[in-house]
Length: 463
Image (tube, rainbow, N blue to C red; front, side, top):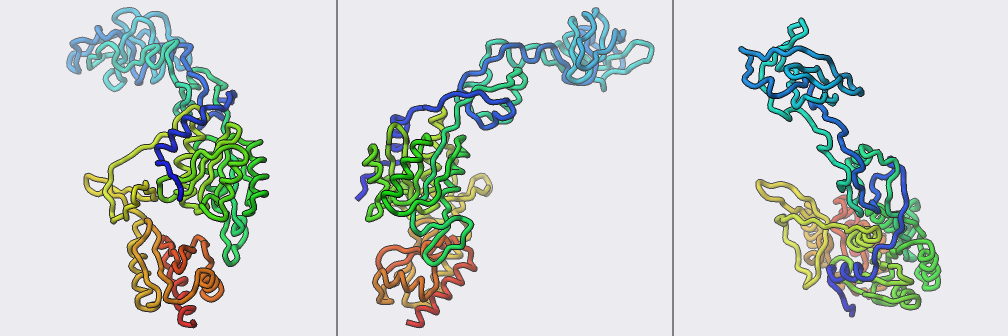
């Protein structure tokens, strides 16, 4: 029996045990996207550095236009023109105006800009202003964006494209950032084969290496993949030792369930301490958290869905925290499109699609599942009556009661592989479960389910 912690308790343990640790480095501005600032960035100058026009028009004193209209325009002499990229001509004399382009410098003495469309050029060195403008209209004043000493970007902020624009405006060619934490990724299991190989009977591709590495990188870190580790304690111990020597944290998938292959927990106990073994969540209950020489080691379930959710919740939190920031979680109220079985005190995590329905959000849990459930139930009832189906245990799994076949667990395992030609735990359809039972992944494409059930029907009829 696992003594479990709630997800919030696990986050509290992570926050208390593993403080921010990564050092600082400076990177070129153009390479700073997605990096985390290690210092506050304050302005060292006024931005903008001069009064600017926001429209094509004429800079003038607003008071010189009061009371004018299309019928009685304000006639002003044109004193010159502002050229982009150059200083404006000398101070503007009262009762005159200067032509200015969008973004051009407004000369001293002017306090407003009238739009080009509201002015008539008479061609004799004078213009007629047909609409009044108030002081400050169509202008940005010096220091409107920032003034010297004002905080622009706080330490711990993950830089977005608009932030790089702000840094460029401040003249920051190099940016102080936190070093990226390196996450070592290990996949354990004798059933695993590389992604580029075709799985044989009972084998699956190594999904978790690239999956967990992507979670670490999405959080702002780097990853180092150590490949597939056999289900042997000495091999795992060597791999963990290597990863701990080269990385800031380690994520291991597989080997975390209570049982004969519970080797991750033993390896961690030999080298450091196990902080917890079990989280009150589904999927992901058998997750392990250990600490070795001040570094975090997460032992994640081998199932890719469970590994993803636990890594997204806790690995992502660790990577963010090591850089001095907090991984935020956002919630949105939504109505479930279908019922979900209660989990007896465990938090349930599931992929979903949010759609708008009137004034509320509708949470669709893989919307094609209900049809697949009905298909499997009807197929087994009509073609394989010896196999009984049960309601989904999670959002995508069904239970198949195979006890009427009269096979023990190993014989059922061999029957599925050798007779029904179904690879167990192959990520497509069937998975091994309790004695006499099989799990069916109803999230598979319908064609996969049809082929798998047809092969099962043929094998059962041949008994």
